[in-house]
Image 1 (cartoon, helix red, strand yellow):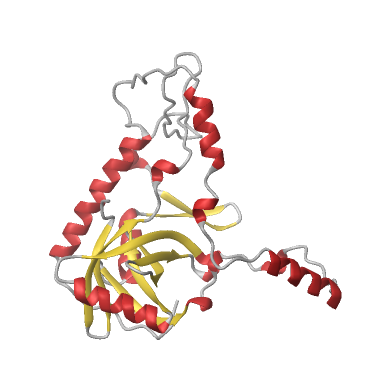
Image 2: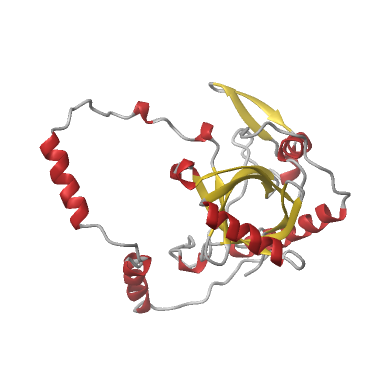
Length: 275
């Protein structure tokens, strides 16, 4: 595994050097590339001005934000970076805001899973935090910058590792009030029968290996019988998506290194539990 973020978990006077790693096995996901049916050449995308019908270089592109219906304003990258820096706290710091019961989290807010692992010198403090969270049946709510964006996250302890789940903000979640829900009153007998069925179908624990990705298995079986060919990449232009991911990872590692070389400063104090 390669770390995608390195820094410190900080709470009280404790600072634990860690790195976080993606908990998702990307190779197990079903992914396709778009190819030209005629010659199997990869499809690439270019950025065109819809008005002038000409390709636009990156240095002539700005971000537009819709402030009202069909009304936009623009923001420069430097302005966006400044807001992210001010609101994201100290780079390389995962600040613990509070500890809560795991049941207090809304699973709908779970965004992306990661693993946190200690770096040199942080092994004992990491183990103490992991065991203390397990004993207390608590999770830590943290704030940190991931890929320059300030994020909320949850430190979720496991038997050996602490997981980090990035969280969506409450504003991003839709309320169920807009759903076509009825106000039908249930009958006690119906509820009791449903409880009996739930009890019959209940087990001591859930084993995810009993529910493999059958779609991927069937797809691999289908593709195994197809003729194979090599992609001939065209010269110039953007690299294919997979190589762009590698370039992005390298850029992130360099950014983390630059952040670590700057003087460390504490994030502004925030109210307990503030989002």
